[in-house]
Image (cartoon, rainbow, N blue to C red):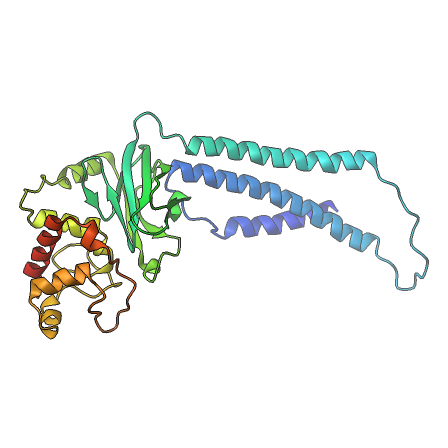
Length: 330
């Protein structure tokens, strides 16, 4: 029976260890979660090997001979020692998993005394990230080995923030703020994915998390902090409006780096559409933002672009964005 148990343990252990079941952990929290997973997995493999060994041994040892027509064996009343063992052992194993899980949960929720606080905003169909300098960016930049508190919310429907290498997921819910603590410990670029069905463009609602060294992060943060726009707006303010409202994730627009979205039509040739609709370029762009379903370009569907930008974007910002798009399209 021991040999059978060892064989079952070796086979199941090989399957568990050889196959890369989990993504590479890129945060301390993910490392703890992975430890909890493997802690429970090892216990499960031990139980599996033991139960398999007992079943196979009993099957081979006590099988009925084909010529044995005798009646069933004598009934056996319970064994107290055995019952105590098979009650105590599972209790200890489950309790150990619960204790480890509670410790990991407590540590993963501890942001320390001075975390970097970043607001994560989900909206159809883009992630944007607001930093302490008040600026909003389409990608998440993080310093390595520093606690980060993500304050997550949504502008429209329920989304769910997930980076596979961070091993944690948190819903973005309109009207409330949820929190997620991460401490990146691996340099690299990792995908930010929405894992809550949120509309037609759900599968394309992606961004990236870039973990940088302290020096690189400080340099990026300094260079990515533009001076406050003037009251009249300007290009910087227009790009900020375009980015913070998620347009960058849904549309392609050559004038703005990173605007490579395919959910909505390209904005590089708006003058062609304006001419086809017998409207001035600025009037057409304004209408396309505030009343997007009045004209739907061929190949695209209604119900994808939010129809509330006419009220959610302040008039001065909207007019500035319209002028910027008109000046940089073809």
